Length: 261
Ligand SMILES: NC(=O)c1ccc[n+]([C@@H]2O[C@H](COP(=O)([O-])OP(=O)(O)OC[C@H]3O[C@@H](n4cnc5c(N)ncnc54)[C@H](O)[C@@H]3O)[C@@H](O)[C@H]2O)c1
Image 1 (cartoon, protein in one colour):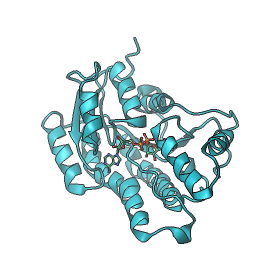
Image 2 (tube, rainbow, N blue to C red; image 1 turned 180 degrees about the horizontal axis):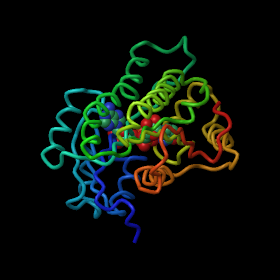
Image 3 (cartoon, rainbow, N blue to C red; image 1 turned 90 degrees about the vertical axis):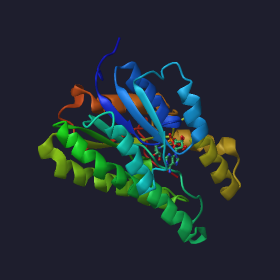
């Protein structure tokens, strides 16, 4: 059995489905306790019935972009533990699809609020808990769109580049406390999110969904989909002692994506 996360206490935002839930299952199977929030009560109810849901998984309904909700989530966690080993800022929405002049300011602001400002709410409360622990790991979910341009998705790209900027800055601020801060840039993940992204792009460009899907896969030199578990395993590594000297890094898990278009 892989016990690399034994006794680790991990907080993750937007964890009830997609990458967050895949990562949570890996953390639980490797001995961690996970504090997970999500906005979607249906997904939360579903995971409550999952066989892995034992005393080591705590779930809470919370809009990660609402500061009061995030504060309530942490108040519940603090009744159980004062120290944590890791925070995963996983929350992030795809945002609108379209050329910039066709987008509206409300969608722009919403994307930045959920994808970047929410991370600030989590970091602000989690950092003192990591300091109490005398070290730990913060992992921010960026994207290939956080290191390259991404036509038709300008607010998403802006938000994911911002995540990289915060990652680099926090790694410098927190190094002396042995708190490591890294960002993961997933490639094209096989899952519900990409089904929606491909549908929206097809609607906007009038190109068929199967052609768009092939184009997305071809953006990686390895010409492959990435799995949610690939990202979960990278998170697990970045929390474990195996990555004890890795901080300030922007890590692609993307089959070597060389373009996003
Ligand atoms: N899926 C991909 O192809 C891909 C690629 C690159 C980067 N990413 C990034 O990885 C992260 C996770 O992506 P995913 O594909 O698992 O996402 P997803 O769209 O599948 O959503 C995962 C969860 O987020 C929750 N959520 C949405 N808004 C929320 C909010 N305001 N508060 C709390 N929970 C909320 C949803 O209810 C859902 O359970 C995101 O930051 C995303 O931008 C994903």
